Image (cartoon, rainbow, N blue to C red; front, side, top):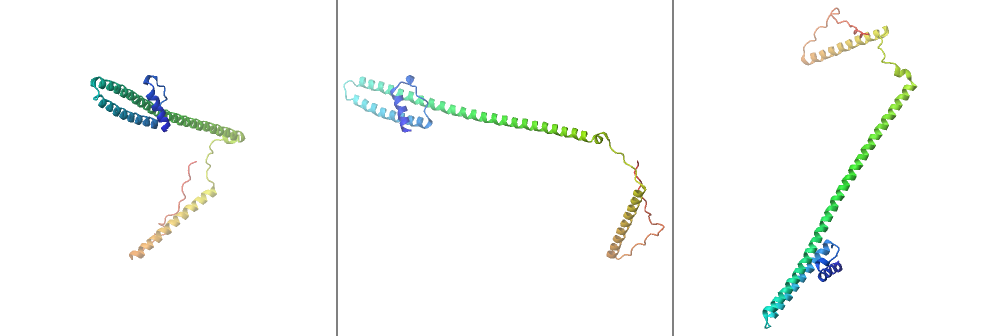
Length: 217
């Protein structure tokens, strides 16, 4: 890394700005080059300060100072140009990296959307295939048993005499069971309250079991 920074600095120092054809440095190399430029600026300023101090020892002071100041200005201007060039290269690199990140995110989103669209299309195709298979199976079943498809809903037949007798018997059993439950409940209440049980209804007043009406045909 130090070799790269030294090479960049040497190219910048030995060539004018408009004649440079150096590839954009990396971020770390750019920082090293900027540090070298700053060190060179400090060293050159110190050297020119010493030269100006030496001018006062000569007879023509103003001419000597003017020459030193001219060379100082040219040197510092060249260092400034190099510094600006490095900053520009660094900004361009950062912009390229940011653009690359944006393009990568855009591509990832496009790939994700495309995959979702493919999955959706695959599901739709599977649904159509399954519906077609179900329809074919239905046609095959109708072809195997044509009577099932042709026959409509069966009519409800009237109950037979034996079924009616069974219904009446079941209804009477339900009434008897309900009467037993009521009697047991009344007995428990009498035991808890100490009140006598109410008299049972006479046989003539007892509710005779009635068979439920048959449903209309």
